[in-house]
Length: 256
Image (cartoon, rainbow, N blue to C red):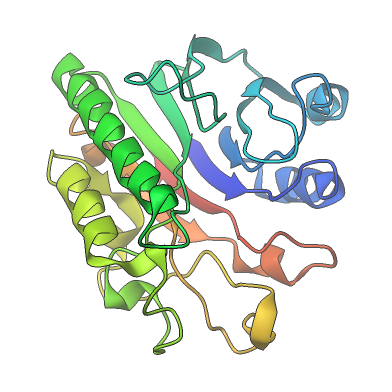
């Protein structure tokens, strides 16, 4: 079973890129972030024609998350992260697919920091910690996949000082991610590639893609029940080089 996460960065604009990748990579489950479309504008007909069913939560202009499932119907279980009913950002969706709970998330960026946006990022992380604890205690097979907007260690960012003040690499951001993993989650890509950068994001600015000046922001965390089933993991880097590409590339795992 192949499970992927892909920050598509506007599904309307990049639908051809997405469909091309679905045809070649054939993931069984896909978590999408940054749909940047309303609920009604989600291209469900094209997705279904490609062989996928979907659940999604759209949002005008920004955010938006979706879970696609190949040749099966995802069973929707949540459309928001618990803990703050006033938070209307479309950043979390959860569904059961073939006996696995799939949590798709788009964690706040947090810039500029310090400030209210960074405070929101850390508060969102706390809510995620609480929900993730309940998922661990459920003893169900769970994947928490998405754009966490954190490069967890120095290995997860190219050698540079230009991002030193960015929310993606702040000590509090990294500590929050580490605290989440320390609950018992397996960072699948890092588990199989402990010493390799495995970047998933290359900013459009400053020629960063040609220079491979990337960051690893997109992560797939496996619950203790699922971690022993991990066979393969990787990043489809070539997708980032396509015309009209997202600034992210899909990251994925294969489970037995």
